[in-house]
Image: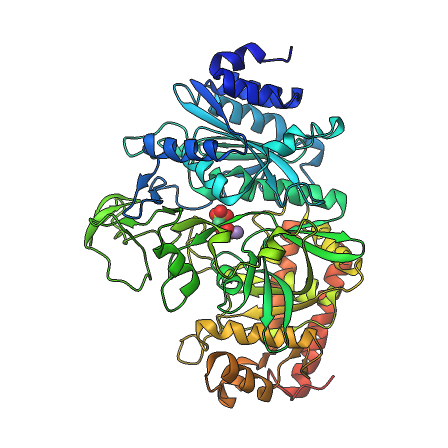
Length: 631
Ligand code: SPV
Ligand code: MN
Protein backbone atom coordinates (compact mmCIF):
# COMPACT_ATOMS: atom_id res chain seq x y z
CA UNK A 1 0.00 0.00 0.00
CA UNK A 2 1.45 3.32 -1.09
CA UNK A 3 1.10 6.48 0.91
CA UNK A 4 -1.96 8.54 -0.15
CA UNK A 5 -3.58 5.58 -1.90
CA UNK A 6 -6.89 6.03 -0.11
CA UNK A 7 -6.95 9.77 -0.67
CA UNK A 8 -6.25 9.38 -4.38
CA UNK A 9 -8.92 6.72 -4.72
CA UNK A 10 -11.41 9.14 -3.23
CA UNK A 11 -10.55 11.83 -5.79
CA UNK A 12 -10.07 9.68 -8.88
CA UNK A 13 -12.26 7.40 -10.94
CA UNK A 14 -11.26 3.77 -10.87
CA UNK A 15 -9.84 4.09 -14.38
CA UNK A 16 -7.72 7.10 -13.45
CA UNK A 17 -6.48 5.54 -10.26
CA UNK A 18 -5.54 2.50 -12.31
CA UNK A 19 -3.33 4.67 -14.50
CA UNK A 20 -1.38 5.90 -11.48
CA UNK A 21 -1.23 2.49 -9.82
CA UNK A 22 0.13 0.87 -13.01
CA UNK A 23 3.26 3.01 -12.73
CA UNK A 24 4.23 1.24 -9.49
CA UNK A 25 6.17 4.28 -8.40
CA UNK A 26 5.94 5.45 -4.78
CA UNK A 27 7.48 8.81 -5.73
CA UNK A 28 4.57 9.52 -8.06
CA UNK A 29 2.07 8.61 -5.36
CA UNK A 30 3.93 10.91 -3.02
CA UNK A 31 3.96 13.84 -5.43
CA UNK A 32 0.35 13.59 -6.57
CA UNK A 33 -0.88 12.60 -3.12
CA UNK A 34 0.91 15.36 -1.30
CA UNK A 35 -0.63 18.06 -3.48
CA UNK A 36 -3.99 16.33 -3.67
CA UNK A 37 -4.07 16.67 0.08
CA UNK A 38 -2.56 20.14 0.33
CA UNK A 39 -4.31 21.90 -2.60
CA UNK A 40 -7.48 19.88 -2.08
CA UNK A 41 -9.04 19.58 -5.56
CA UNK A 42 -12.51 18.07 -5.97
CA UNK A 43 -11.35 15.49 -8.51
CA UNK A 44 -8.21 14.43 -10.34
CA UNK A 45 -8.06 13.25 -13.94
CA UNK A 46 -4.96 11.33 -14.99
CA UNK A 47 -3.81 11.31 -18.59
CA UNK A 48 -1.91 8.63 -20.38
CA UNK A 49 -0.67 8.96 -23.97
CA UNK A 50 -4.03 8.18 -25.57
CA UNK A 51 -5.83 10.45 -28.03
CA UNK A 52 -8.89 9.95 -25.81
CA UNK A 53 -7.21 11.83 -22.98
CA UNK A 54 -6.00 14.62 -25.24
CA UNK A 55 -9.56 15.01 -26.49
CA UNK A 56 -10.90 15.03 -22.93
CA UNK A 57 -8.53 17.85 -22.00
CA UNK A 58 -9.53 19.86 -25.10
CA UNK A 59 -13.20 19.44 -24.22
CA UNK A 60 -12.70 20.39 -20.59
CA UNK A 61 -10.83 23.57 -21.53
CA UNK A 62 -13.94 24.60 -23.49
CA UNK A 63 -16.46 23.27 -20.98
CA UNK A 64 -14.81 25.15 -18.13
CA UNK A 65 -14.75 28.36 -20.17
CA UNK A 66 -10.95 28.61 -20.14
CA UNK A 67 -11.00 28.53 -23.94
CA UNK A 68 -13.65 29.48 -26.49
CA UNK A 69 -14.12 27.97 -29.90
CA UNK A 70 -13.41 30.22 -32.89
CA UNK A 71 -14.95 30.23 -36.37
CA UNK A 72 -12.49 27.54 -37.44
CA UNK A 73 -13.76 24.58 -35.42
CA UNK A 74 -10.29 23.38 -34.38
CA UNK A 75 -9.10 26.79 -33.18
CA UNK A 76 -9.67 28.19 -29.71
CA UNK A 77 -8.93 31.43 -27.91
CA UNK A 78 -7.81 31.93 -24.32
CA UNK A 79 -7.29 35.08 -22.29
CA UNK A 80 -4.90 35.43 -19.40
CA UNK A 81 -5.85 38.06 -16.85
CA UNK A 82 -5.14 41.69 -17.79
CA UNK A 83 -2.21 41.80 -15.35
CA UNK A 84 -0.86 38.37 -16.34
CA UNK A 85 0.35 38.91 -19.88
CA UNK A 86 4.05 38.08 -19.55
CA UNK A 87 6.57 36.32 -17.36
CA UNK A 88 6.58 37.66 -13.79
CA UNK A 89 10.30 38.05 -13.14
CA UNK A 90 9.93 39.68 -9.74
CA UNK A 91 7.98 36.80 -8.23
CA UNK A 92 9.90 34.01 -9.96
CA UNK A 93 12.49 32.86 -7.42
CA UNK A 94 14.85 30.04 -6.63
CA UNK A 95 14.35 28.27 -3.33
CA UNK A 96 17.91 28.05 -2.09
CA UNK A 97 19.37 26.24 0.92
CA UNK A 98 20.95 28.67 3.41
CA UNK A 99 24.49 27.55 2.68
CA UNK A 100 24.09 28.35 -1.04
CA UNK A 101 22.41 31.74 -0.73
CA UNK A 102 25.64 33.68 -1.06
CA UNK A 103 26.66 31.86 -4.21
CA UNK A 104 23.23 32.53 -5.75
CA UNK A 105 23.22 36.20 -4.74
CA UNK A 106 22.93 37.51 -8.31
CA UNK A 107 19.89 35.37 -9.05
CA UNK A 108 16.43 36.05 -7.66
CA UNK A 109 16.44 33.72 -4.67
CA UNK A 110 14.67 33.16 -1.39
CA UNK A 111 15.88 31.11 1.55
CA UNK A 112 14.52 27.58 1.20
CA UNK A 113 12.44 27.18 4.34
CA UNK A 114 11.07 30.69 4.17
CA UNK A 115 10.10 30.42 0.50
CA UNK A 116 8.63 26.96 0.88
CA UNK A 117 6.51 28.07 3.84
CA UNK A 118 5.22 31.01 1.81
CA UNK A 119 4.32 28.98 -1.28
CA UNK A 120 2.73 26.23 0.81
CA UNK A 121 0.62 28.79 2.59
CA UNK A 122 -0.45 30.36 -0.71
CA UNK A 123 -1.28 26.97 -2.21
CA UNK A 124 -3.20 25.59 0.78
CA UNK A 125 -6.67 24.59 -0.50
CA UNK A 126 -6.05 26.62 -3.66
CA UNK A 127 -7.74 23.97 -5.82
CA UNK A 128 -10.78 23.55 -3.60
CA UNK A 129 -13.83 22.70 -5.67
CA UNK A 130 -11.82 22.34 -8.88
CA UNK A 131 -11.28 19.41 -11.19
CA UNK A 132 -7.60 19.01 -11.87
CA UNK A 133 -5.43 17.04 -14.23
CA UNK A 134 -2.15 15.14 -14.08
CA UNK A 135 -0.03 14.57 -17.21
CA UNK A 136 3.20 12.78 -18.04
CA UNK A 137 5.65 14.21 -20.56
CA UNK A 138 9.16 13.98 -21.87
CA UNK A 139 11.48 16.89 -22.52
CA UNK A 140 13.26 15.98 -25.73
CA UNK A 141 12.46 12.83 -27.70
CA UNK A 142 11.30 9.87 -25.62
CA UNK A 143 13.68 6.97 -25.04
CA UNK A 144 16.68 9.00 -26.07
CA UNK A 145 19.93 10.05 -24.36
CA UNK A 146 18.29 13.49 -23.96
CA UNK A 147 14.97 12.46 -22.36
CA UNK A 148 13.91 14.13 -19.13
CA UNK A 149 10.62 12.77 -17.80
CA UNK A 150 8.22 15.29 -16.25
CA UNK A 151 4.90 15.34 -14.39
CA UNK A 152 2.50 18.26 -14.57
CA UNK A 153 -0.25 18.66 -11.96
CA UNK A 154 -2.52 21.62 -12.73
CA UNK A 155 -6.03 22.96 -12.25
CA UNK A 156 -5.85 24.82 -15.56
CA UNK A 157 -7.23 22.86 -18.49
CA UNK A 158 -5.81 25.55 -20.78
CA UNK A 159 -2.36 24.74 -19.39
CA UNK A 160 -2.97 21.03 -19.82
CA UNK A 161 -4.22 21.56 -23.37
CA UNK A 162 -1.23 23.75 -24.23
CA UNK A 163 1.16 21.14 -22.90
CA UNK A 164 -0.36 18.42 -25.03
CA UNK A 165 0.31 20.63 -28.05
CA UNK A 166 3.76 21.71 -26.96
CA UNK A 167 5.34 18.53 -25.52
CA UNK A 168 5.74 14.84 -26.14
CA UNK A 169 3.47 12.66 -24.01
CA UNK A 170 5.42 10.11 -22.03
CA UNK A 171 3.12 8.09 -19.80
CA UNK A 172 4.58 5.00 -21.41
CA UNK A 173 8.05 6.17 -20.55
CA UNK A 174 7.03 6.32 -16.87
CA UNK A 175 5.43 2.91 -17.23
CA UNK A 176 8.71 1.44 -18.45
CA UNK A 177 11.02 3.19 -16.00
CA UNK A 178 13.73 1.10 -14.42
CA UNK A 179 13.64 0.91 -10.63
CA UNK A 180 16.69 3.14 -10.24
CA UNK A 181 15.13 5.88 -12.41
CA UNK A 182 11.91 6.13 -10.48
CA UNK A 183 12.82 9.31 -8.58
CA UNK A 184 14.47 10.98 -11.53
CA UNK A 185 11.83 13.24 -13.03
CA UNK A 186 10.83 16.91 -12.92
CA UNK A 187 7.70 17.82 -10.95
CA UNK A 188 5.44 20.78 -11.66
CA UNK A 189 2.53 21.91 -9.55
CA UNK A 190 0.40 24.76 -10.86
CA UNK A 191 -2.80 26.53 -9.91
CA UNK A 192 -4.52 29.40 -11.68
CA UNK A 193 -6.01 30.19 -8.27
CA UNK A 194 -9.34 31.87 -7.74
CA UNK A 195 -10.97 32.97 -11.02
CA UNK A 196 -13.37 35.79 -11.89
CA UNK A 197 -16.40 35.46 -14.18
CA UNK A 198 -14.13 35.67 -17.24
CA UNK A 199 -11.89 32.87 -15.97
CA UNK A 200 -9.05 35.29 -15.12
CA UNK A 201 -6.86 34.85 -12.06
CA UNK A 202 -8.02 37.11 -9.22
CA UNK A 203 -5.16 37.05 -6.72
CA UNK A 204 -2.30 38.32 -8.85
CA UNK A 205 -0.71 39.81 -5.72
CA UNK A 206 -0.17 36.21 -4.65
CA UNK A 207 1.37 35.15 -7.96
CA UNK A 208 4.52 33.17 -7.15
CA UNK A 209 6.76 30.85 -9.12
CA UNK A 210 9.23 29.15 -6.79
CA UNK A 211 11.79 26.74 -8.16
CA UNK A 212 13.57 24.09 -6.18
CA UNK A 213 16.50 22.99 -8.34
CA UNK A 214 17.79 20.78 -5.53
CA UNK A 215 14.72 18.54 -5.66
CA UNK A 216 13.56 19.25 -9.24
CA UNK A 217 10.17 20.68 -8.39
CA UNK A 218 8.54 23.97 -9.37
CA UNK A 219 5.57 25.56 -7.62
CA UNK A 220 3.58 28.03 -9.73
CA UNK A 221 0.55 29.72 -8.18
CA UNK A 222 -2.06 32.32 -9.19
CA UNK A 223 -1.24 32.79 -12.84
CA UNK A 224 -2.16 31.59 -16.32
CA UNK A 225 0.22 33.21 -18.84
CA UNK A 226 2.07 30.20 -20.28
CA UNK A 227 5.54 31.51 -19.42
CA UNK A 228 4.38 31.56 -15.79
CA UNK A 229 2.14 28.52 -15.71
CA UNK A 230 3.50 25.81 -18.02
CA UNK A 231 5.92 23.63 -16.10
CA UNK A 232 7.50 22.02 -19.13
CA UNK A 233 8.54 25.36 -20.62
CA UNK A 234 10.60 27.87 -18.67
CA UNK A 235 10.35 26.20 -15.25
CA UNK A 236 11.70 22.97 -16.59
CA UNK A 237 14.36 24.91 -18.45
CA UNK A 238 15.71 26.34 -15.21
CA UNK A 239 15.79 22.88 -13.65
CA UNK A 240 17.50 21.48 -16.75
CA UNK A 241 20.14 24.21 -16.79
CA UNK A 242 21.01 23.35 -13.23
CA UNK A 243 21.06 19.62 -13.92
CA UNK A 244 23.13 20.06 -17.08
CA UNK A 245 25.66 22.15 -15.19
CA UNK A 246 26.23 19.25 -12.81
CA UNK A 247 26.29 16.62 -15.57
CA UNK A 248 28.37 18.35 -18.25
CA UNK A 249 25.81 19.10 -20.96
CA UNK A 250 23.94 22.30 -21.86
CA UNK A 251 20.36 23.56 -21.94
CA UNK A 252 20.13 26.68 -24.09
CA UNK A 253 17.46 29.21 -25.01
CA UNK A 254 17.89 28.42 -28.69
CA UNK A 255 16.18 27.44 -31.89
CA UNK A 256 17.49 24.60 -34.00
CA UNK A 257 17.24 24.87 -37.78
CA UNK A 258 18.74 23.61 -41.00
CA UNK A 259 20.07 26.07 -43.54
CA UNK A 260 19.20 24.49 -46.85
CA UNK A 261 21.40 24.93 -49.90
CA UNK A 262 19.44 23.34 -52.74
CA UNK A 263 22.10 23.92 -55.37
CA UNK A 264 24.73 22.13 -53.35
CA UNK A 265 22.25 19.59 -52.00
CA UNK A 266 23.36 20.45 -48.47
CA UNK A 267 21.72 20.85 -45.08
CA UNK A 268 23.64 22.56 -42.25
CA UNK A 269 22.30 22.68 -38.71
CA UNK A 270 22.40 25.91 -36.76
CA UNK A 271 21.26 26.82 -33.28
CA UNK A 272 20.54 30.39 -32.31
CA UNK A 273 19.98 32.38 -29.13
CA UNK A 274 18.18 35.71 -29.21
CA UNK A 275 16.45 37.37 -26.25
CA UNK A 276 12.63 37.50 -26.42
CA UNK A 277 11.33 39.36 -29.47
CA UNK A 278 14.76 39.74 -31.10
CA UNK A 279 14.09 37.58 -34.16
CA UNK A 280 14.61 34.06 -32.84
CA UNK A 281 11.43 32.45 -34.15
CA UNK A 282 11.54 34.38 -37.41
CA UNK A 283 15.11 33.21 -38.03
CA UNK A 284 14.08 29.61 -37.40
CA UNK A 285 11.20 30.23 -39.82
CA UNK A 286 13.10 31.87 -42.68
CA UNK A 287 11.30 30.80 -45.85
CA UNK A 288 13.17 28.10 -47.72
CA UNK A 289 15.01 26.79 -44.65
CA UNK A 290 13.88 24.07 -42.24
CA UNK A 291 12.94 24.25 -38.57
CA UNK A 292 13.67 21.72 -35.82
CA UNK A 293 12.72 23.89 -32.84
CA UNK A 294 12.16 27.52 -31.95
CA UNK A 295 12.86 28.00 -28.24
CA UNK A 296 14.76 25.47 -26.13
CA UNK A 297 17.59 23.10 -27.06
CA UNK A 298 19.54 20.49 -25.14
CA UNK A 299 23.14 19.92 -26.24
CA UNK A 300 25.01 16.73 -25.53
CA UNK A 301 28.36 15.40 -26.49
CA UNK A 302 27.50 12.04 -28.07
CA UNK A 303 30.57 10.09 -29.13
CA UNK A 304 32.48 13.33 -29.42
CA UNK A 305 29.82 15.01 -31.58
CA UNK A 306 27.96 18.21 -30.72
CA UNK A 307 24.34 17.01 -30.89
CA UNK A 308 21.15 19.00 -30.21
CA UNK A 309 17.47 18.21 -29.73
CA UNK A 310 14.39 20.34 -29.56
CA UNK A 311 13.04 19.96 -26.05
CA UNK A 312 9.53 20.79 -27.27
CA UNK A 313 7.11 19.59 -29.93
CA UNK A 314 5.23 22.82 -30.57
CA UNK A 315 5.54 26.58 -30.66
CA UNK A 316 4.33 29.21 -28.22
CA UNK A 317 5.09 32.05 -30.58
CA UNK A 318 4.62 35.81 -30.46
CA UNK A 319 1.79 36.62 -32.84
CA UNK A 320 2.42 40.35 -33.16
CA UNK A 321 3.59 41.19 -36.69
CA UNK A 322 2.86 37.71 -37.99
CA UNK A 323 1.38 38.58 -41.38
CA UNK A 324 1.32 37.31 -44.94
CA UNK A 325 4.35 39.36 -45.94
CA UNK A 326 6.76 39.13 -43.00
CA UNK A 327 5.99 35.67 -41.63
CA UNK A 328 4.19 33.88 -44.45
CA UNK A 329 4.67 30.30 -43.26
CA UNK A 330 3.24 30.85 -39.80
CA UNK A 331 0.54 33.18 -41.07
CA UNK A 332 -0.75 30.55 -43.49
CA UNK A 333 -0.83 27.98 -40.74
CA UNK A 334 -2.80 30.27 -38.44
CA UNK A 335 -5.37 30.74 -41.21
CA UNK A 336 -6.01 27.01 -41.60
CA UNK A 337 -8.56 24.98 -39.69
CA UNK A 338 -6.10 23.09 -37.51
CA UNK A 339 -5.55 23.05 -33.76
CA UNK A 340 -4.28 26.41 -32.52
CA UNK A 341 -4.79 28.17 -29.20
CA UNK A 342 -4.69 31.93 -29.65
CA UNK A 343 -3.99 33.80 -26.44
CA UNK A 344 -4.60 37.44 -25.61
CA UNK A 345 -5.78 38.45 -29.07
CA UNK A 346 -9.14 39.93 -30.09
CA UNK A 347 -12.11 37.76 -30.95
CA UNK A 348 -14.04 39.77 -33.50
CA UNK A 349 -17.83 39.72 -34.00
CA UNK A 350 -17.14 37.22 -36.80
CA UNK A 351 -15.60 34.90 -34.17
CA UNK A 352 -12.19 35.18 -35.84
CA UNK A 353 -8.90 36.17 -34.15
CA UNK A 354 -7.24 39.57 -34.75
CA UNK A 355 -3.89 40.84 -33.55
CA UNK A 356 -1.36 43.67 -33.87
CA UNK A 357 0.54 43.79 -37.13
CA UNK A 358 -1.69 41.17 -38.74
CA UNK A 359 -1.84 43.11 -41.97
CA UNK A 360 -5.65 42.90 -41.91
CA UNK A 361 -8.03 45.67 -40.86
CA UNK A 362 -9.28 44.65 -37.38
CA UNK A 363 -12.90 45.11 -36.27
CA UNK A 364 -13.74 48.07 -34.04
CA UNK A 365 -15.01 45.90 -31.21
CA UNK A 366 -14.88 42.42 -29.79
CA UNK A 367 -13.53 40.53 -26.79
CA UNK A 368 -9.85 40.50 -25.84
CA UNK A 369 -7.47 40.20 -22.86
CA UNK A 370 -8.99 43.39 -21.43
CA UNK A 371 -12.60 42.19 -21.59
CA UNK A 372 -15.29 43.63 -23.85
CA UNK A 373 -13.25 45.86 -26.13
CA UNK A 374 -14.01 48.83 -28.36
CA UNK A 375 -11.53 50.87 -30.35
CA UNK A 376 -10.18 53.69 -28.15
CA UNK A 377 -11.14 52.06 -24.82
CA UNK A 378 -8.86 52.90 -21.87
CA UNK A 379 -7.80 50.78 -18.92
CA UNK A 380 -7.94 51.85 -15.25
CA UNK A 381 -4.60 53.64 -15.63
CA UNK A 382 -5.87 55.64 -18.59
CA UNK A 383 -3.81 53.76 -21.18
CA UNK A 384 -5.50 52.96 -24.45
CA UNK A 385 -5.98 49.21 -24.89
CA UNK A 386 -4.91 47.86 -28.27
CA UNK A 387 -6.63 45.24 -30.36
CA UNK A 388 -4.43 42.60 -28.73
CA UNK A 389 -1.53 42.47 -26.29
CA UNK A 390 2.00 42.97 -27.68
CA UNK A 391 2.92 39.62 -26.15
CA UNK A 392 -0.16 37.80 -27.46
CA UNK A 393 0.71 34.30 -28.66
CA UNK A 394 -0.25 31.27 -30.70
CA UNK A 395 0.21 27.71 -29.48
CA UNK A 396 0.60 25.20 -32.27
CA UNK A 397 2.17 21.84 -33.05
CA UNK A 398 5.46 22.09 -34.89
CA UNK A 399 4.64 19.29 -37.31
CA UNK A 400 1.89 21.35 -38.93
CA UNK A 401 4.61 23.31 -40.62
CA UNK A 402 5.64 22.29 -44.12
CA UNK A 403 9.12 23.55 -43.35
CA UNK A 404 9.71 21.23 -40.39
CA UNK A 405 12.85 19.13 -40.68
CA UNK A 406 11.08 15.91 -39.71
CA UNK A 407 14.23 13.87 -39.77
CA UNK A 408 16.01 16.22 -37.36
CA UNK A 409 12.95 16.69 -35.17
CA UNK A 410 12.46 12.99 -34.64
CA UNK A 411 16.10 11.95 -34.35
CA UNK A 412 16.68 10.34 -30.95
CA UNK A 413 20.33 11.33 -31.08
CA UNK A 414 19.50 14.85 -32.22
CA UNK A 415 21.21 16.71 -35.03
CA UNK A 416 24.87 17.54 -35.44
CA UNK A 417 25.28 21.28 -34.96
CA UNK A 418 27.78 23.14 -37.15
CA UNK A 419 26.95 26.78 -36.43
CA UNK A 420 25.69 28.79 -33.48
CA UNK A 421 24.16 32.26 -33.84
CA UNK A 422 23.89 34.82 -31.05
CA UNK A 423 21.70 37.80 -31.87
CA UNK A 424 20.73 40.85 -29.86
CA UNK A 425 18.62 43.92 -30.46
CA UNK A 426 20.99 46.76 -30.94
CA UNK A 427 20.50 49.86 -33.06
CA UNK A 428 24.05 51.19 -33.22
CA UNK A 429 26.89 48.80 -32.33
CA UNK A 430 27.20 45.33 -33.76
CA UNK A 431 27.27 44.35 -37.42
CA UNK A 432 24.56 42.10 -38.95
CA UNK A 433 26.81 39.04 -39.00
CA UNK A 434 30.29 38.36 -37.73
CA UNK A 435 32.17 35.10 -37.32
CA UNK A 436 34.10 34.38 -34.18
CA UNK A 437 37.71 33.23 -34.60
CA UNK A 438 37.22 30.44 -32.05
CA UNK A 439 34.62 28.87 -29.76
CA UNK A 440 36.09 30.51 -26.67
CA UNK A 441 36.11 33.94 -28.35
CA UNK A 442 32.56 33.30 -29.44
CA UNK A 443 31.29 32.55 -25.95
CA UNK A 444 33.07 35.51 -24.37
CA UNK A 445 32.64 38.10 -27.13
CA UNK A 446 29.42 37.11 -28.90
CA UNK A 447 27.38 35.14 -26.34
CA UNK A 448 28.33 36.77 -23.04
CA UNK A 449 28.03 40.30 -24.45
CA UNK A 450 24.52 39.89 -25.86
CA UNK A 451 22.32 42.86 -25.15
CA UNK A 452 18.81 43.76 -26.09
CA UNK A 453 16.25 46.41 -25.65
CA UNK A 454 13.40 45.20 -23.41
CA UNK A 455 10.15 44.27 -25.13
CA UNK A 456 6.56 43.53 -24.25
CA UNK A 457 7.40 39.86 -23.56
CA UNK A 458 8.38 40.72 -20.00
CA UNK A 459 6.63 42.86 -17.42
CA UNK A 460 8.15 46.30 -16.76
CA UNK A 461 9.38 49.17 -18.89
CA UNK A 462 9.95 48.66 -22.60
CA UNK A 463 12.89 49.97 -24.64
CA UNK A 464 15.66 49.77 -22.01
CA UNK A 465 19.01 48.25 -23.09
CA UNK A 466 19.89 45.21 -21.00
CA UNK A 467 22.65 42.64 -20.84
CA UNK A 468 21.47 39.13 -21.52
CA UNK A 469 24.39 36.69 -21.79
CA UNK A 470 23.54 33.76 -24.06
CA UNK A 471 19.98 35.23 -24.17
CA UNK A 472 19.53 32.89 -21.25
CA UNK A 473 19.66 35.12 -18.19
CA UNK A 474 16.01 34.74 -17.30
CA UNK A 475 16.66 31.05 -16.89
CA UNK A 476 20.26 30.53 -15.76
CA UNK A 477 19.90 28.77 -12.43
CA UNK A 478 23.44 28.61 -11.06
CA UNK A 479 26.17 31.23 -10.93
CA UNK A 480 26.77 32.99 -14.25
CA UNK A 481 30.57 32.64 -14.19
CA UNK A 482 30.34 28.89 -13.75
CA UNK A 483 27.68 28.66 -16.45
CA UNK A 484 29.88 30.66 -18.85
CA UNK A 485 32.88 28.42 -18.18
CA UNK A 486 30.69 25.34 -18.71
CA UNK A 487 29.70 26.73 -22.10
CA UNK A 488 33.35 27.14 -23.04
CA UNK A 489 34.23 23.67 -21.80
CA UNK A 490 31.36 21.98 -23.61
CA UNK A 491 32.21 23.41 -27.04
CA UNK A 492 35.92 22.78 -26.63
CA UNK A 493 35.19 19.19 -25.61
CA UNK A 494 33.73 18.01 -28.93
CA UNK A 495 35.51 16.91 -32.09
CA UNK A 496 34.13 19.38 -34.66
CA UNK A 497 33.41 22.45 -32.59
CA UNK A 498 30.70 24.54 -34.28
CA UNK A 499 31.54 28.02 -35.55
CA UNK A 500 29.98 30.87 -33.59
CA UNK A 501 28.49 33.95 -35.30
CA UNK A 502 26.84 37.09 -33.95
CA UNK A 503 23.73 38.58 -35.54
CA UNK A 504 22.02 41.92 -35.26
CA UNK A 505 18.89 42.57 -37.31
CA UNK A 506 18.16 45.91 -35.69
CA UNK A 507 20.83 48.34 -36.86
CA UNK A 508 19.29 51.73 -37.62
CA UNK A 509 20.53 54.13 -40.25
CA UNK A 510 21.20 57.86 -39.81
CA UNK A 511 17.47 58.51 -40.42
CA UNK A 512 16.51 56.25 -37.50
CA UNK A 513 14.97 53.55 -39.68
CA UNK A 514 16.04 49.91 -39.74
CA UNK A 515 18.75 49.41 -42.34
CA UNK A 516 17.61 46.06 -43.71
CA UNK A 517 14.36 44.32 -44.51
CA UNK A 518 13.13 41.56 -42.24
CA UNK A 519 14.15 38.89 -44.72
CA UNK A 520 17.79 40.03 -44.89
CA UNK A 521 18.48 37.51 -42.12
CA UNK A 522 18.44 34.88 -44.87
CA UNK A 523 21.53 36.47 -46.39
CA UNK A 524 23.43 36.58 -43.09
CA UNK A 525 22.54 32.93 -42.49
CA UNK A 526 23.76 31.80 -45.89
CA UNK A 527 26.98 33.71 -45.51
CA UNK A 528 27.53 31.89 -42.21
CA UNK A 529 26.66 28.61 -43.92
CA UNK A 530 29.19 29.34 -46.65
CA UNK A 531 31.89 30.14 -44.08
CA UNK A 532 31.29 26.82 -42.35
CA UNK A 533 31.92 25.13 -45.70
CA UNK A 534 35.00 27.22 -46.46
CA UNK A 535 33.36 29.19 -49.26
CA UNK A 536 33.98 32.89 -48.58
CA UNK A 537 36.99 34.90 -47.59
CA UNK A 538 36.44 37.54 -44.91
CA UNK A 539 37.80 40.77 -43.47
CA UNK A 540 39.20 40.81 -39.96
CA UNK A 541 37.84 43.15 -37.30
CA UNK A 542 39.04 43.48 -33.69
CA UNK A 543 36.23 41.07 -32.69
CA UNK A 544 36.03 38.60 -35.57
CA UNK A 545 35.50 38.20 -39.29
CA UNK A 546 32.95 39.97 -41.50
CA UNK A 547 31.68 39.36 -45.04
CA UNK A 548 33.06 41.04 -48.13
CA UNK A 549 30.75 43.24 -50.18
CA UNK A 550 30.98 41.22 -53.38
CA UNK A 551 29.80 38.04 -51.66
CA UNK A 552 26.86 39.78 -49.98
CA UNK A 553 25.87 41.46 -53.21
CA UNK A 554 25.50 38.05 -54.85
CA UNK A 555 23.69 36.58 -51.83
CA UNK A 556 21.19 39.48 -51.72
CA UNK A 557 20.45 39.04 -55.42
CA UNK A 558 20.22 35.27 -55.24
CA UNK A 559 18.05 34.95 -52.13
CA UNK A 560 16.00 38.15 -52.09
CA UNK A 561 16.40 39.59 -55.57
CA UNK A 562 17.55 42.81 -53.89
CA UNK A 563 20.35 45.16 -54.94
CA UNK A 564 22.54 45.61 -51.92
CA UNK A 565 24.42 48.90 -52.09
CA UNK A 566 28.05 49.43 -51.18
CA UNK A 567 26.93 52.42 -49.13
CA UNK A 568 24.63 50.28 -46.97
CA UNK A 569 27.35 47.66 -46.67
CA UNK A 570 29.86 50.19 -45.40
CA UNK A 571 27.42 51.59 -42.87
CA UNK A 572 26.25 48.20 -41.62
CA UNK A 573 29.71 46.68 -41.35
CA UNK A 574 31.59 49.61 -39.86
CA UNK A 575 33.40 48.62 -36.69
CA UNK A 576 32.48 51.10 -33.93
CA UNK A 577 35.37 51.14 -31.44
CA UNK A 578 34.06 53.34 -28.64
CA UNK A 579 30.66 51.71 -28.70
CA UNK A 580 32.23 48.25 -28.53
CA UNK A 581 34.45 49.25 -25.60
CA UNK A 582 31.39 50.62 -23.79
CA UNK A 583 29.56 47.39 -24.49
CA UNK A 584 32.38 45.34 -23.00
CA UNK A 585 32.53 47.58 -19.95
CA UNK A 586 28.78 47.10 -19.47
CA UNK A 587 29.25 43.35 -19.75
CA UNK A 588 31.95 43.42 -17.07
CA UNK A 589 29.71 45.38 -14.71
CA UNK A 590 26.84 43.01 -15.38
CA UNK A 591 28.95 39.91 -14.66
CA UNK A 592 30.32 41.41 -11.45
CA UNK A 593 26.81 42.19 -10.30
CA UNK A 594 25.32 38.84 -11.26
CA UNK A 595 28.21 36.74 -10.01
CA UNK A 596 30.78 38.45 -7.81
CA UNK A 597 32.79 35.21 -7.84
CA UNK A 598 32.96 34.85 -11.62
CA UNK A 599 36.47 33.66 -12.61
CA UNK A 600 39.07 36.36 -13.15
CA UNK A 601 40.08 34.85 -16.49
CA UNK A 602 36.79 36.07 -17.98
CA UNK A 603 37.53 39.67 -16.95
CA UNK A 604 41.12 39.37 -18.11
CA UNK A 605 39.85 38.25 -21.50
CA UNK A 606 37.57 41.30 -21.79
CA UNK A 607 40.34 43.64 -20.67
CA UNK A 608 42.57 42.24 -23.39
CA UNK A 609 39.75 42.70 -25.93
CA UNK A 610 39.31 46.32 -24.82
CA UNK A 611 43.05 46.93 -25.16
CA UNK A 612 42.97 45.45 -28.66
CA UNK A 613 40.05 47.67 -29.69
CA UNK A 614 41.70 50.77 -28.18
CA UNK A 615 44.82 50.06 -30.18
CA UNK A 616 42.75 49.64 -33.34
CA UNK A 617 41.04 52.92 -32.59
CA UNK A 618 44.40 54.70 -32.31
CA UNK A 619 45.57 53.17 -35.56
CA UNK A 620 42.46 53.23 -37.76
CA UNK A 621 40.08 55.71 -36.10
CA UNK A 622 36.93 55.26 -34.05
CA UNK A 623 34.83 54.10 -37.01
CA UNK A 624 36.67 51.48 -39.01
CA UNK A 625 35.36 50.72 -42.48
CA UNK A 626 35.25 47.07 -43.55
CA UNK A 627 38.63 45.97 -44.85
CA UNK A 628 40.53 48.86 -43.26
CA UNK A 629 41.52 46.97 -40.12
CA UNK A 630 44.66 44.86 -40.27
CA UNK A 631 45.71 42.56 -37.45
C1 SPV B 1 10.18 33.81 -24.03
O1 SPV B 1 9.75 34.87 -23.56
O2 SPV B 1 11.38 33.57 -24.13
C2 SPV B 1 9.24 32.81 -24.51
C3 SPV B 1 7.86 32.89 -24.09
O3 SPV B 1 9.63 31.88 -25.16
S1 SPV B 1 7.68 32.47 -22.43
O4 SPV B 1 6.88 31.28 -22.36
O5 SPV B 1 7.04 33.59 -21.80
O6 SPV B 1 8.99 32.23 -21.85
MN1 MN C 1 11.79 31.63 -24.97
